[in-house]
Length: 74
Image (cartoon, rainbow, N blue to C red; front, side, top):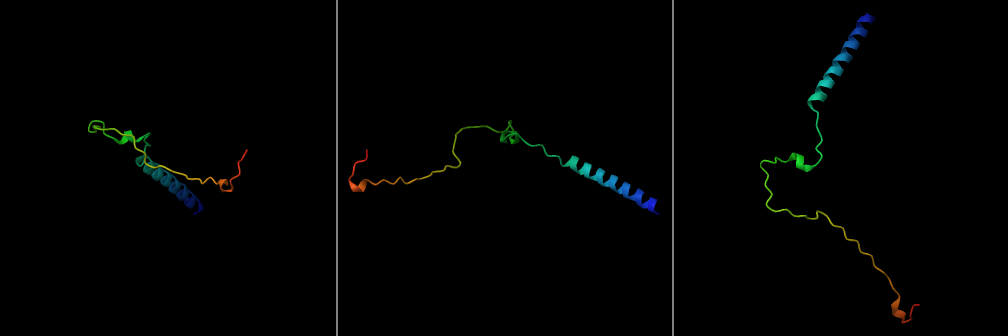
């Protein structure tokens, strides 16, 4: 009885690994290096190219000065 359970356990593990390997092989996704890889170069025609900022950040800092006293700073 114990031998049957050990054999059944080993066969089950082998089947699970074979199933996982098969699923992993069919769903393999290759990573593109850039967005150009997704474009069909036969059908894309550029009419105008421009370089546009998507985001811009502006930081503001108030510089405080004490010029209201009328004293000259050396």
